[in-house]
Amino acid sequence: MLEFAARKRSAGGVWRDTIEPDPVSPAAKPLSTRVLIAFGCVYLFWGSTYVAMRFGVEVMSPFLLASVRFLIAGPLMLALCAARGLRLRQSWRDLGMLAAIGILILGMGNMGVMWSEQYLPSGLVALLVAVTPIYVALFEWFLPDGEGLRARGWVGIGIGFVGLVILLSPGLRDGLHGRSGQLLGSAVAVLAAFAWTCGSILSRRARVATSAFVAAGWEMLFGGLFNLGLLAIAGGTYQVHWGAQAVWSVAWLIAFGSLVGYSAYIYLLDNVPVAKVSTYAYVNPIVAVILGALLMGERMAPVEYAGMAAILVAVYLVTSSKLKAVKVTAADEVEVIG
Image (cartoon, rainbow, N blue to C red; front, side, top):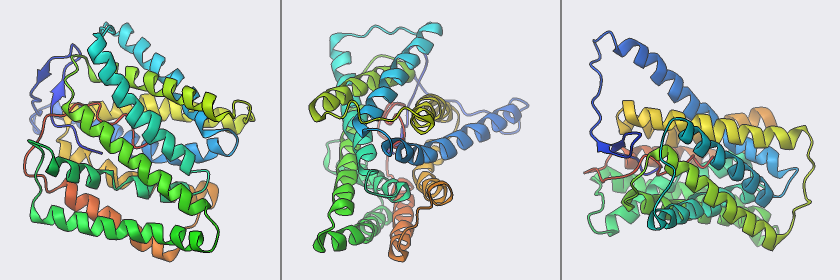
């Protein structure tokens, strides 16, 4: 979706320090294989969700796609948690907090991404969303007890906003010539990233006594209900062709975006330094651009490739220049933004 978790939580909701395995111990070898598989899942599957969403919005309303996805994925995640013996019941206060996070990240953030893909290539949307770590760094700098940045982090923020302007420039030109689709889609994608940022900041500072997987299940459920409300307001219930394209889009987003991808993400947070896990923020856009070109024939303008390079450099500089860690949850992001 970025905002990188630094503390770990056990299945029972108890915060704990993560003990890294000895790299020379016998137990480290099987762990390495699992870590590589988990990275592959996060890099490939989360990057592929942008293309899956683009396929989906071609044959159905984005409000309906988002509603179906999360109203299935959320209960499935909660059912899996219950099967593992995790406690699903939450206090009203915690449910309210999880609802707010789910609405911001999934109801507004992820939904906005799906909506913008009606007008923009999936790779371009992924790049616009990739600036979220930059937004988070700025938010943290202003907030009390927030996270500081070294000088290169501020350089990264400057480069990132230059890259963002470059990415938006084709849409601005189209808007000036009366073609508002790309401009509108770009604006919605940027606003979606902002909503995702607000949800991530809230999740970082929330104190919800539950496991990351249970939290994610509730957040997906609340996000799906919010999207269902948007669907009722906007209409479009029947704007769907339930053929193979729609079914595969929904199934891919549920299985590989929400369940497999997120589970791999949580596993990495428990076994790998968070600085390494955060690399998904600049790998996912590359995967999205490549898959968009291969599967959908998407092509970006040459100037947009310059914007892509600037964004990726900026994300690297910002995410690698944190001065101190803040307490965050493993469920800061249910996906990116996939």
